[in-house]
Image (cartoon, rainbow over all chains, first blue to last red; front, side):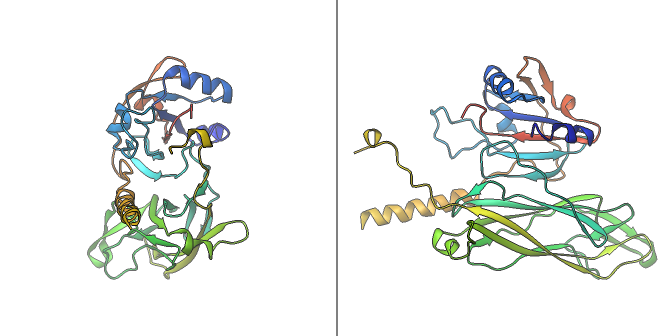
Length: 255
Length: 65
């Protein structure tokens, strides 16, 4: 994050990170790591709770209670969520990937960074940017191909239904119809649950990477005409380690 | 046999919990406001964090562990 701070600021974006640490702990970390952006102290996890991301799977009464489910929100100038990224590893958010030029739009893939373990859930995102005057159609439209993201079937994962943002209604005067569309930026999020180690091991390559492949389909139109539907292959590579079987030192173990 | 039963029960509970991991405010929603102290001891609100094009807001586990 700190490495990207200047680039982020150059895009006109603010940057802040929130945790349940005290300001003193945050200062020690910031000084050590030369962090140049605000680290915000939410010691009683009030803000974490207000965002609905308190990790309730952690045991109350232990020092770990109060941590959030980690994630990053990309907000517009009005504080409205444009995109969100949920990482399984509990560090600061990973880096934004390169944008891919596809026909009529650009997109980048995110999610699945860090190391994962069998049975974990991970969110995979397609962040799309449409040029001005270009739009694509939202699910539920008739007569046009709606935008869709479909992952290949695999024994290595099961996919939740893809989440789509709220669509805008556009009036098409030529045909006297109002249709649901997306313009500008949008994010499609596909959260998958990795299968057990038996199903995954067979499908890993030599570096323990699992390829999750899919297709992005859409039909782009500008204010004058519609173009032929496009199908673009997309793929994420996830690093999957076996279950962590490291035990506590012998003298500390329960007998 | 008893151990297997409790292992299965634990696995079922784990799957149910995992299926309900909350992800916070949705795309298109405005996030809640806040006023929190930063590492330098000054208060920052959401409005102060937002830049002309928006902001990246990162929630992380801890700077300590």
